[in-house]
Amino acid sequence: MKQRLQFFGAAPEIMKAVSALNKAVDECGLEKSLLHLIKLRASQINGCSYCVEMHSREARRDGETEQRLYLVSAWKESPLFSERERAAFAWTDVVTKIADSGVPDDLYAKTLEHFSEEELVKLSVAIGMINTWNRLCVSFHAIHPVAAAKAA
Image (cartoon, rainbow, N blue to C red; front, side):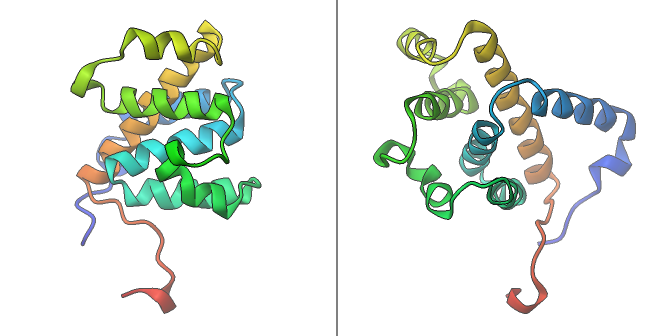
């Protein structure tokens, strides 16, 4: 696969705004570990190899375990995640696939058991942000780093 275009070069002004929102999300006050996990989860759902690789690598750099990273895709079946993380994953799944069925009232209520209203807004913007990156990277075939010795 070849990258279709460099979106930062093709539209620098809008990408500057996207980057500013991304910085705001990263500094919004939600736990860095939680942000890594929801970015990874949304990227898995969207099939974004660039973002899956990047957020896995960044999470490991910041202390996340390999085992938990491997199990993000099967979070419902794993006891390794806290109730707050599980609520964030459920919210991420539904918001990322919002066209399928919207956001059910019971999920909203359950998520508010683990997040304040302010945090839920921040979480939702973070999910929207990673979905924006996923759409850019998938649409334009962004290529994640590949170790030369392991390239197929």
